[in-house]
Length: 102
Image 1 (tube, helix red, strand yellow):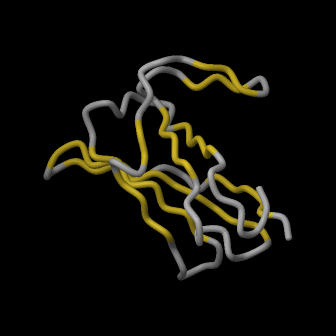
Image 2: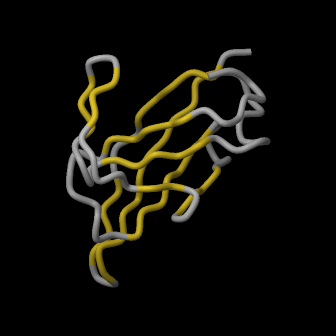
């Protein structure tokens, strides 16, 4: 991905069934700055796919179409997924890193 691009598809693998959750995708260009996206901006596909050798199992990943104005910073970004299962159970993934090119 490049600075100021939009319309790109971003996938985040949760590695567990999140179909019955309320997920929030958190994109962080710099520590302390974040972009949070929830449904309907993100979706949980019900189909298993393989992209560049990585398998995304049905109901275990989110897809997000990058919006205009999201990618305003070139450099190393990180993303994580916060999934709310119930008022008493919320899981937060580890950070996954990606690069936005100038």
